[in-house]
Amino acid sequence: MNGAAVTSSMIFGGPRRYVQGPGALEQLGALSERFATRPLVIVDADVLPFVSATLDRALTGRASTVLPFRGEVTFAAIDALVAAGKDAGADVVMGLGGGKGLDAAKATALRLDLPYVAIPSIASNDSPTGRSMAIYDDSHVMVAVEVIPDNPLLVLVDTALIANAPARFLRTGMGDAIAKKFEAERAYADRATNFFDGYPTLTAMAIADCCYRTLREHGEAAMAAAERHEPDAAFEAVVEANVLMSGLSWESGGLSYAHAVVRGLVKARGAAMAPHGDHVAYGTLVQLAIEGRDDAAVLDLMGWCRAVGLPGSLAELGMSDPTAGEIAEIARLTTIGPKGGKILVKASPDAIAAAITRVERLAALETV
Ligand SMILES: [Zn+2]
Figure 1 (cartoon, rainbow, N blue to C red):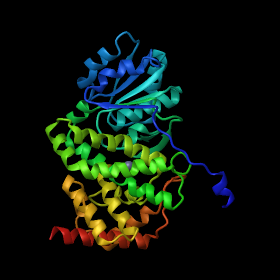
Figure 2 (cartoon, protein in one colour; figure 1 turned 90 degrees about the vertical axis):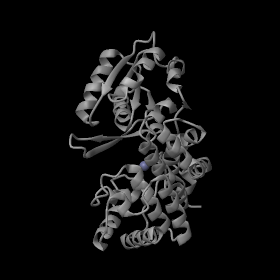
Figure 3 (cartoon, rainbow, N blue to C red; figure 1 turned 120 degrees about the horizontal axis):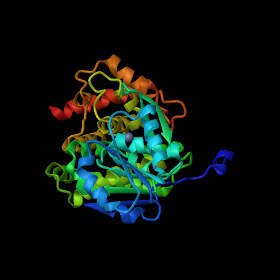
Figure 4 (cartoon, rainbow, N blue to C red; figure 1 turned 45 degrees about the horizontal axis):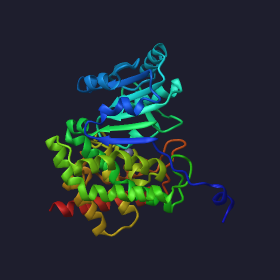
């Protein structure tokens, strides 16, 4: 064993408590009684009409301040929220909404050095349980990723609220989550460190595996429930996979090619504006090809993606008839991570381009 292996530890982290179920928002008062006497609640403005009465009930008797949030999570917007939080003498910051409301609240909690509570209104990605947030400028260009020191004290997932949202959010959350088993296993095999700068535990690996099995077993039924806006057992299982299992797998397991390919897809003609989870789903197919898995394995996952409405090809992401040059550019960008990035990319641009080309060939076979 070399020195690095002896001194390197495994690290597993996560929220202190996770609560999920239809009507769970009603429990916010009881669940936060011990630590929230003066909560600052930052709520996505579009969601506020659906939750304001429940928030009033749940936080009755507290000196709570509820602020609607709209627009980009910019440094200026965060400064305004921080000032409001100081004026209110807040002792905890709660975020309620989609990605923007949660990230705005997380950034405010970081600056006020307060604990953070996440209440997602959609299950479209893995971020509610995690510590990082993205900050943008006014023209929707990401300018920074910041990290709060501790995971949320509480992640509260009201599945009645989440079932109210358009079904496409659940679908793209499944795309973000389906990758996690393959990414955690790749990171584990490559001895990559996770987002706590430690090595993944077997616990994280088991969660990543369960995330995958849950989506394969319940994904289609959950989409049907999402279309009906009626949470059922399949919907509950997939929300847990999209939010809790996917989040723990990402932060305590690790990411790999499926997310690295997204760096190219966000700049690709036609595909750039597709939702994050749609990019990741396609990236997962590319990862299987990079790993040299056989055609049956790639086609099996591609079939599931298409069955739930996720893309199986670049054309399905919005990039029709990609040229060899465009594929080479996606592959090149896949290998270029941000400074201090945690995704280990060992494959060469040529190998990645060949994998994308192979996925495209298999996707064409399947549609004939
Ligand atoms: Zn992701």
